[in-house]
Length: 146
Length: 400
Image (tube, rainbow over all chains, first blue to last red; front, side):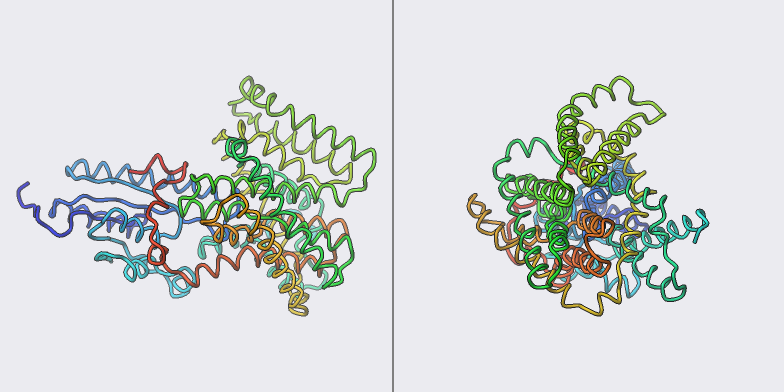
């Protein structure tokens, strides 16, 4: 454990993951931090149903999300194993911001790490920014990776 | 437009645009296709008099009709028979109350307040009596209620509610003749036998590249749909019930369901929803906005008033407020199918159809918009960490 800070304030890290390059970058930052701080990492993905949800489409969206995230998780877990890091994965359904905030609180997470998508103004107005919501309501420090 | 391929490219192009809009704004593809169909028809009508999206063309009607039938089958196949067996009393009562409240309430408002004809008013009652199973299920997944007894009962009740809508649509507007009796008896026989025959047939001949399962199901749905139309009923009625009775067998065949989804989303439903949207007249909606408001509030109040004491009677007092709100949401698929049936059979006019579809969309979208506009993390309002300890079945195996 040479070079690791075992008395760090950040023992549990949560990374918001959606498979985008930005979230991959956030995962890389989280793994680097975890290696330095001897922290555990939870890679957390949220499947967002279309609004308003319709019967057949909802099932299809959930199935696709599960497959998409599973694939991403597999790669991340391989990377973590090669670095000897403690990484877990989790999924939920709903609004990503809210689910991340809730999971972080339930699990007693010390730091949330997110990638910034850089959406357009219209998209932000319509959908809201996940990182802004998490920054506003999270119980712990939040790191947004550009 | 008489060139089949030009017309097809216009429709599929609009479907492509609608899908992009759905992706950008994270809205359902069905909603996006209805809106794109409406706007496209408005633009086309403004620039080319007598021009339309070919909505009344035979082959478009066939593709759209097949889309509706397969959608209803897939919607029925999502029922969990075990939940229904375990909670049949509660879900039957709540489902029937959830159906009859808006069915009778909206019919009364359409007839006595809006002065619609009797048959048009019944059609309004049918179209607005539905409940969106998907909206209820999506929120249950979010809050973790999908694994609680109350959540399961409400979900099963939504299926009963929609079954009431489909039966009402299939029987109210059909003339009661010998054909009706033959249709009902044939339905009983088919519904009783297919759950036993289908898995055996699939086991013996299924799993080949010739997609015999899809052909078998389409044959069954078309044959029963044909019988329904012959008897003066509606083809979606047997499709929904066949989906429900096959939910425990075919519904669990994930690969088959995915293939049917691909067929439905890729080819059939774009024609259905764009066609449904193209019949909506925006000028008619702008001219009489109060009709929309009357139907919208009739739907909301007639759903909540009878459901409140009913759910309370079953000692479910904790989360009922949430579920009442959810059950007020109208299913886009059932609502538009009912309204389109009325338009196609001359039960309602295009103006009435426009108001009904607008109300269906409104009652599906407004609760979601309100929830988003007043977004506040629930844990800050009422901390209940035990709510979300279990992930949905489809995702739970991946949880850490």
